[in-house]
Length: 462
Image (cartoon, rainbow, N blue to C red; front, side, top):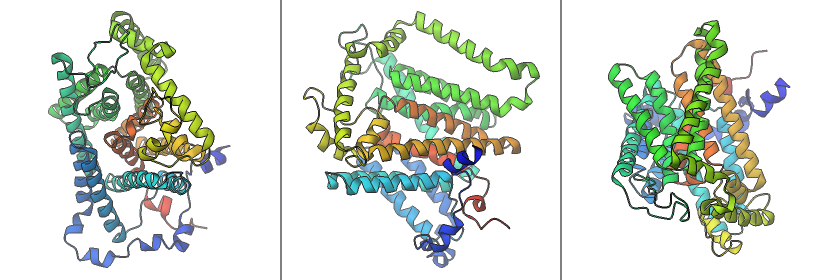
């Protein structure tokens, strides 16, 4: 059974055989002699960190087209440093599944009924995956990792602060985000610089996880105080979005964080706390949530609307979109219609109820079936399983080494869990502001491994 799980999760991939025969891998290091004489590329990883940080610093405030230009620049830079790489690439099981995921997206594009639109979506996906590859390489450095994460957290603090300000001073609602027949019809839902409360909720989930980790990782009272302020502002802003999916994802995120923190510090706890700490913490949280549910009417009404079925306008809209998506899946079950919102926008109108136009399937899992078929969904789920397994293996190693960087890894795993749950009922992280964060979180997890030779090194000793 253990052997089967190791095989499924690619825990010990042997890539040295592939390296010997792969013409593609032989391109790695093709320009290594030129790199040795380049003064600029001596700072290659720092430059990569600057590019990635620039994406996160600007993403909430600029158009998707400009984000695309930044991703193109990142992709060109990754190609240059990969061709000039003098060391072995740090390929993990996550990298393998990401590459397989891209291959399936390419196949879906080839079989798409709207190939030109799907090709545009494939290009966008390729840019995200190249950003992942560059980030996974850059984040191996503890210093650069802290630099990039700090850059994101500082910008997220600006975004959440503006969102909190909107709650207290009011802001125009750009769409009918609340059921017009409910008691919350005129309630304010904040959206900060992102223009949509659900999008803002997805953006804040990684910010909350990483800011909690910063409380433990950052040194000095000033830094820890700043991290605490980030946790409060990000959490308050997420609550003010009134995004039910983000609320549920937040609960998942906190649960995973607590479980992993318990795992991290368990051996330092007295026997009593080893047994009773988790029940006491989760019991206290359940009590606080119950009090909040009973005393805060907006919270109660929003949560109860989840179970209202078609009586809630938001639920009814999603159900109608899902019904149309199932019709698409019936006609394109294996490879889907091709990746990207352009392909979706061309195919969906043929199946939709005329009163319910949509830009996506309102579920990342359903969206994967629509765009890449059941094959694509299977690969995506496999990628998530491999990512969590790899993260837990590396967390165990870091705990044994008492390496404090493991706390960043805990936050990344929790953020991935939260985003995965949020994606069950929304597709906001197909937007570049969230999609870049998703692949950034994946890159954080992929940046941890025992050593390069474990994954891409030489054959095992006889």
